[in-house]
Every structure is written in C-alpha cells, then in structure tokens.
Image (cartoon, rainbow, N blue to C red):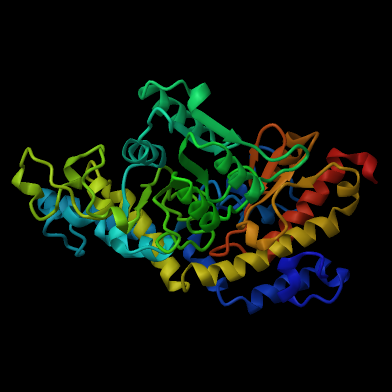
Length: 463
C-alpha cells in the first residue's frame, strides 16, 4: 500500500482493507477533527440530487449528501446564521449608531478588524500585511495598478495558459488600459506536451529567458489541475531577476499552509467563498508585504476606507493612507459578508489552524487517490479515467481533478443523481475536493463507490 505517498501514515495492510467500508469508519473514529463536521450545514440528498435521484430506498433521500465541492463553494457554518442575524438586530436596534455602539461589540466602523488576525494566521503574515476587501478580481486589478509598472524594456505579465479565465480577462484588460497589446504583453506558460502539470524548472527557465517580464502572477494552487506551485522558490527566483511577484491564492487559502511574509511575496489576493466558507460572493482578501507598509510612492486606487482610520471621519480631501494592506481598501466592507467570513475563520482557529487541517487533508486525499485506483483499476487501464493532479501530496491541496476523455457529462450527471456533489470543468474534467473541516473518510468511500456504479453504467463494455 505504499504506491501512494499520502497513504503511508494510514497503516493499511492490503488492498482488501482499503476496499472495506470499515476502514473508512475506523479512520473517522480516529479523526480528532471529525467533530467539526457537525458545525456545518450539509444539504440532504433530496435537496441536491435533482429530478431523478438514484436511490434504492426513499429513506436515503433524507441523509446528508456527499459534498466534495468545497473548492467551488464551501458549506455554511451553522453559527453563521446566528452571527448574521445579530447584525440585523444591531441594524434594527441601533441604526447608524451601530458604526460605533454595537450591541454585540462588533462596531461597523472597524468591522474589518474582526478578521485581520485570523487572516494573518491563515496565510503566514503579520496583521498589518492583510485585509478583507472587495472581490478577488477587483483586488487583482488594484494590485496591478500599484505593482505593474511597465517600461519600454519590461512590460510583460506572466500567467498560466490555463489560469482561471478571470485572471486572463483582468490581465488583458489591464494591459489594454496601459496601451499595451495583450498579444505582446501577456505571456503564458503551459505544461510540456503530454504532461498535465507545470514543472517548476520550466517556470524558472521562462522567467530567466525573458528579461521583458515585469510581473509574475501565478496561482498558488492551479484551479483546473489542483497543482500546488512552489511559491517560495518561484518568488525568490523571479525577484532576483527583477520581477515583482503576486499570487492568486483563490484555491490555496484555507487549503494549504502559506508563509507569505517569510516567502517575501510582494502581494497576493484571494476569494473567501471556497475553503473559507464565507458564502457565495463573499468578501475577498489581500496581502501586501510589510516592506511596502509605509510606501506611498506607488500609485494606488485610493478610497475613503483606505484613509487612516484615526482621521477618516474628518472628511479631509487629502488622502492619508492607513499603514499596510488596509491603506488599499476603497469602500467600507460589507458587514454581513465580513461577519460570515469571521464565522468560518473562528472555526479554523478552534480546529487548530491550517497545519492541523493539512495533516488530515493529506490523509483524506491520499485515501481518495488510492481508492480510485484500486476500485476503478479496469477503467484506468482502459484510459476511461485519468488523474491530472500530482500524486505527491506536497504538490497538491485537497483536490483531485479527474479527466474523462469521453462521457464526462454522463458521469457527472450520474454522480449528481446519487447525491454526490462535485463540479465539472468542460470539456473533460470532474473535480473532487474532500475538505478536512467537514468531509469524512466515509464521504470519500461513498463517492468512489458511486463513481464505480456510474462508470459501469456509462461504459458497460468494462464488465
């Protein structure tokens, strides 16, 4: 059972034990984080399985679904409803006075401070280096305004060829706004022919080979493949070559350990509705390294909320930025969205932080990988299914991206009918993400067993 590095610490004896549901149950019984599953609202199968659910017993419809889609939208912490309702109470009871006189001691005038320390702990930063603000793409635009300073010799932005589409749109439109043809200013890098993931050395060679690169802006965890990039190595190398380095951490924050301060990352942006469970469209996050904390020489998209909070309400026409990341805030943060984020971050702290969750994540994803290969061995041999995500647990988060060269939508629809909630990325990929905060080994077991049933139906020649 040592073919998969992440499985070595599960102490499974043989293939038969891997395929036994009792193994999943035993692993859940040993899991010290299992209690946090109860902190989240898990939809029932009846609520998500669609018009044609595929269950032998009607009673199964009332059981929790198998939710492996936290990489797209995290589940709702149950306490979020209470905390958000408290904000409605504050609004109804205090009106505008809630900005300073809040019945639950969360004054709106400083509501962003409620999440600052939590975010700093999560991304390996100092509180002055982080803030909650805006949305991911608007923050990327803001950071490019500040840190992308093109010259005649340096004017390119390096991103992945398969970066999330919004990153392509943002970079392209930002280049156009600077009068730079995106066909010349946007440099993309793809895996080698026949490979699924980018090699770190190829990224370094690309940076070394093109002195016209001004900004390197890659994903911490690649959304399509689930690859976890070597952030410290790439950052250090690119900076040595004269580049500014920023990271889109949408799929990394709350998923893998980060040390943004120690890694000397220039800036990073992320959303919070995936692994941070803040709700659809939740408020995003920003990191700017401490070395820029008092730097007012660079241009920025300034706004009222970025003004020093000590004199913000003096209403001066002269902008005096707050120190660090907070100085890049523009408008007052959405209170309901910020409190939703605070709710989830409190649970992260209670669970022991990202390192504790990462340890379970490595086991959970390793179990998923081994169970897939063992249960679907014939389908792998027939090339009906592939795993795009690196097998090395240090090079991935909790997501496995499964490629189905043919029939992906049929497989996806079949899983959905069984109440297995994942997501598809056309034309061929289904992503499964067992999240350590609320997913169990039994979730993984059921998902793979349902996948086997579905694949045997979609590809009947495999019998």
